[in-house]
Length: 619
Ligand code: PTT
Ligand code: SF4
Image (cartoon, rainbow, N blue to C red; front, side, top):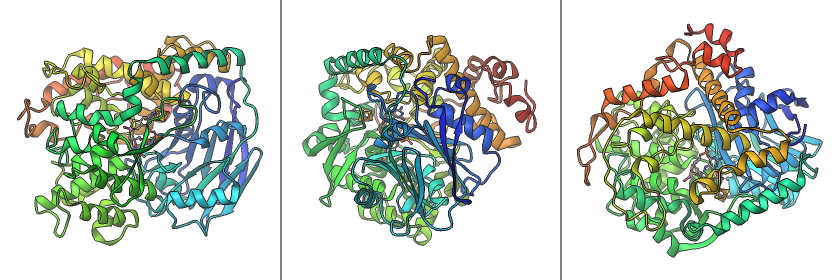
């Protein structure tokens, strides 16, 4: 095989066993890599287990783009059965670990079992060892990387967890390079449950490529095209932070636990405020449009900001000073907590406090209280810290009130408030890991403007509609964002933010692997992955699977926006339900949202049918 090694590094921490598993060219071609490979492994091997038990498997999966000079191709998928949702969970982070993994001669690492004492994995090409991490346990992710670099040198890729993962916070992430985070649905907690503190990788091999010259030529063209884009300068200045002003203007900025869509202090946490505070810029490997904007926070420390982090830890908590929001963001990175779920969980506590459902809680706008709560969550200290470490769904169940619980399938909603955006609500509701925008950021298309300079201030005539076209658009984006980019694996931002020609991707894939993929082939691969992820959820939930699992949070149906031109407006439940049916029909899924037999067969997923028939009937 060219482009793929066809080799997976396997590690069993219970039995201290390390081996290499080979996989076939057919699997490589059908599932491509990253998320595709991860879901195939989890479907085959992780059934009905406790996500925090030794039987769960942590999959670290690269794709054919990684370790090679492809535009923004320094990404890596981390996946497992999620301790937050109980379904399929994954995340994607930019890291040198993906470069070294592939150069070490593997496409993926799968870790199973549980070590007796804290350990870390050291991979140097074919030499792999499980080493003691007793001296590292308890350190934050910044300190952990520093210590590991003292031992193994700077030329390594490192993935690590902080106290959040160690203490099994259900939304703990895996961190790298002091500002890259991945695995929102608690993949860091899965790593912690195995007593695995870190993975350190050093690779020195040459990755086999089908047509090196073509790859070099195409990459150069794409890199040059990125630099020549008219939006490059604005992107370089603000990155994802440009979205604060844009969502605020369009009543979509999460504010006070998503009670409203615009924030009175939005200006002081937006991209322009960031520009005035920026001290440096970081990025992922092989990226020439770096977007990691680093500022000095209110405690004088460096903090790397992104839109989601600021929306969820800023306006959503009623905190309107960017230097303070930056403190919460840095702590999340140090402790290895997902900023989105952390912000969602703290906001839930704040609203529960306001409603009198929690005594001695934290008020909206209380930075000190929020800061303390972040620490208490990471270390699971005290009743409140422990409670909030469980995430919004479990807190709401405990309080017996889900009217303000902002999650889908247990994953907290990311930074888009959807009282007036049915397509975006559908995207959250049908995303394959819970309420995450990564697979279909359809809101820009739905509004008709994007967060770029000039466009932001543009006023648009917007009317709430539920046309079938919206379901089709969600699927189109899910195929590209949740399918193509997660399988390659490559950052989608050159295409989304700067408009890099999407046709580079199949061409690059062909140059790397020698396999010619048409767009139909790529869409089919994406649909295969999507259907397999859906089948995974249905199998894990058995008889409890229900169409209502594809509903957005109640709040968007029962309340209206509190202010702005769309004041009082909200989603209509019947119209949403009809849109969901359209979506199912287009996907070849039945009215419960379960792929039909015919669909599974068409996608080459025949092996799924007997497994699913053990838990439900299939159409
Ligand atoms: C991603 C989610 C996002 S999406 C953000 S900000 W965003 C949050 N970032 C966090 C963070 O930072 N620290 C932290 N402790 N928790 C965080 N949780 C949140 O995680 C990120 C960029 C961004 S910034 C986005 S949109 C794009 N996401 C991509 C993706 O998902 N796939 C892909 N092929 N390319 C992508 N490119 C962009 O990457 P999850 P990163 Mg991230 C500090 O992890 O679980 O996927 O959730 O990867 O290297 O940090 O880059 O406005
Ligand atoms: Fe990483 Fe940003 Fe570059 Fe994407 S655009 S690869 S997230 S630095």
